[in-house]
Image (tube, rainbow, N blue to C red; front, side, top):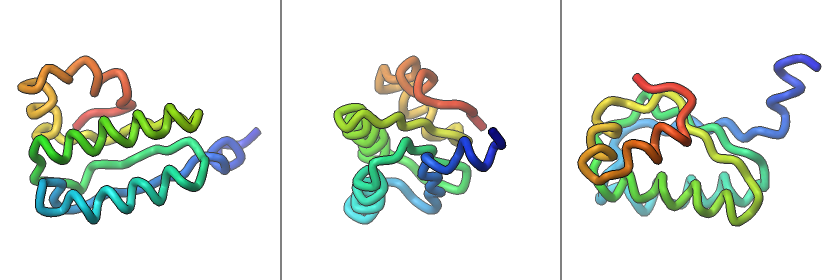
Length: 103
């Protein structure tokens, strides 16, 4: 099976721009739409920032929603500022556990 065939059942989503309280409604809708497709998800966070606690809460929520639906949600290219917020919030181990790559 080729890499393309393996990824056919994975929704790849690239988030970009700020992920803060001010954008949380828009980001939340994008994430909910992706979860509703019923596929495992791979979220690329490389071009995101700035971040705040509301943004991190969205990541926690999308992982929880995916698990309830039997979907895997993984993060790639997690920026340092997001990891710093996770560390201060006591969620660094959780974030490492759901991430495939950190920046």
